[in-house]
Length: 371
Ligand code: ZN
Image (cartoon, rainbow, N blue to C red):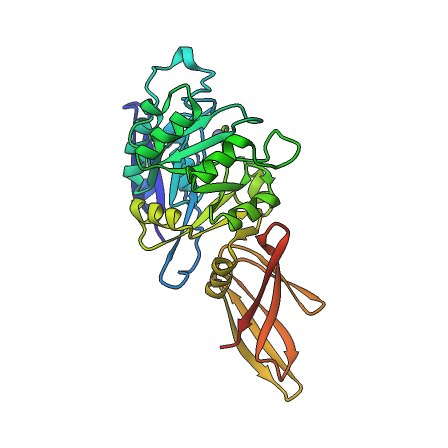
């Protein structure tokens, strides 16, 4: 099996990326009996993180909210791309704040810089990097908004908050209202946000941001047909293993795209075909959640004795499902199968998925068909 080996040629100060086998790796370093080479310290591997197609759609794994040192993040833009690629993502938006720039005195004044630094690295990896900006106004009154697929971040940096949003719109941006419940005690819509909603000046909304889930926001998304988003809003790093050791992954938006491309992602976002995935939990519109479950879980008959039937449920998605059938609770781990026994007369499995939210605190009731 081939592994990706990154060979850093320290002396030349350049980074090369090549597919080599461990055996070939030995040949990279000339034999020297006085120096033993351990490639692991310079090697990065991409996690395999995948879901089966949902109907005709590809499931793309995306994070639409991240920062670099070009706003208040702590990392260089290329690091953000490599981190996302290693994390198994298909697309990332770098959304540096255009107003909040704590390192301003060290930076130039071009708001496009982080994207321009990161884009060649993304291209090298065949990774989708989305150009974005975070329009950052007083959280308690106006809030923060991410504009994605912008052309030029500089004209968005104007004083009037609505003019800023309108400029992003003029550039064809997909606009997300970020973390509506962050830094406020209760999640509610302020006048500015109501006005933007009435004028359809934002398209998506974060139901999950960083470590926070906002159940009420899911109901707003469903009631107003807004695209449902989960995002990391990462400022530092995500690779300290804490998240994976807790059995989870960074919050991501799963996008049901017609094609694996930037255009495919954009079309799906505007069409609202997303699921928010955070900590083995999904928040999505009911029909999308049902289609997703049907794509991931297949049910087959294993054995029948006239009284009971044994069914095998196979999950080909990278998410652990938790569901109830009657009074019994089942856990179906990612990329795994479990068996359950039901009365022989059962034609389907009437399940309630306790880790899939479809409206505020309502979970998905869905019947799995037996094939
Ligand atoms: Zn942010």
